[in-house]
Length: 286
Length: 243
Image 1 (cartoon, rainbow over the protein chains, first blue to last red):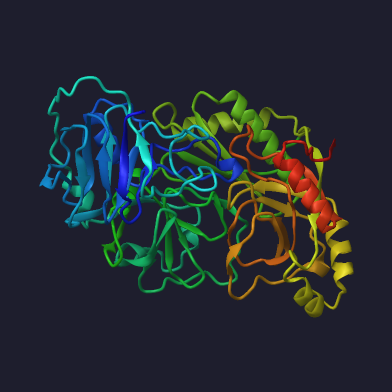
Image 2: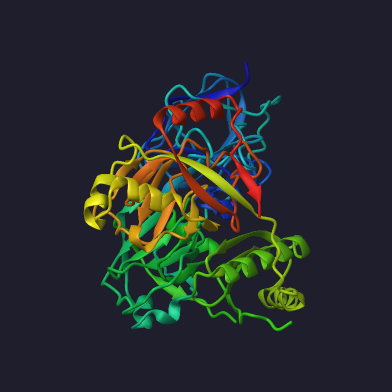
């Protein structure tokens, strides 16, 4: 039997992700991939995995997993009080696990999404060049109780004890740097978008975050033809509210694209949860 | 030859170029976009991540470590200017079976009342046109079609449905389309097609593409069931002809 981590409980919303599914947006297929790429990359990097290795993205409430074989693991991103056999372990550090060890999580201390990488990456199915869960491309959209997440064959348990100090700026509340979107100039009262705070609405998921604030004026008689949107595109809806499109977002949309987040800002927004405040700052460009 | 369109080039973040044509839905624009898309994908593949075509735009996602925005913009401009704009793209016309029985067409009766047509007239009007596939977007395998007769325009439902079944054929405003997978949606459902519009195990995952044409034809429930069975066993071939 292949070495695996078996799901005892799945947590709130846990998915297998990698660095994304590229080349299929013109067929309407989202890019997907880890919401916080920096944290996922860091976990893989500490284990010397390729950047495309599959990790487990865990949201707010972590899962409980039992390992059927030895491996090395790293947990990065949100601090959800990870434990091995009930004993707390550090984030951003390589930890050796043995057959029968149970990984569980406790209180969420900061951020929203935590990443579990295993040595060699999870060996789950690769569909259309990516391991990232997204229905209908993959059969599953989340892990569930009883799933066995295949691990790479792993011989020695020698731990290199690689670790790194976490980059706390990932979780801070400083403004999110962004570029002007193609329809920025249609935004009446344009500059107020950079002086206001917006709060993350409870409609926030891997597809998009609704951001609530003082309504911005939607241009009168404005209509645009449906055009490409990307993860990190911030749209203005006719009600004057903003929607930030996230990694699983649709490929095209018909609302004005007001701002475009940088990749780093997109990672940071992916660590925000309902009611967190966000603001934007403009990057000068060309 | 003179270039028929003035294109604008804008950046979309730090690794994408948005190229825009005039704000119109027009087959001449469609084929101009598709022909530039092919050229970009062939000639600039080393720096490309992917491209996304829509009604009046082509978005090019590139690797910023390999090329700058302004360099890439110049290269694309040169490709566009070197083009003869004959815009020949190999395309097909697909025949799409749809069962318009009221078991599937749950909003047919309402459209019939509102637009003052019999259900048979709606089916006839919907299956007569030669629709143009403008692009694929929104959901995997969702085709944006042009050519819905004005008589069938129907506003989206005030409250979207939570679940629309795979294959649902629907009308939303001035558009008609097919839901390629189960999803929420606010369009008015008039029938269902047994065809698979998105199959992740196939390459490419969608049989129809931008620039193709399609026409619907009415089938009854037993024909629907038969086609569905043939699709499951891999025997069904979607009828098509080269354009």
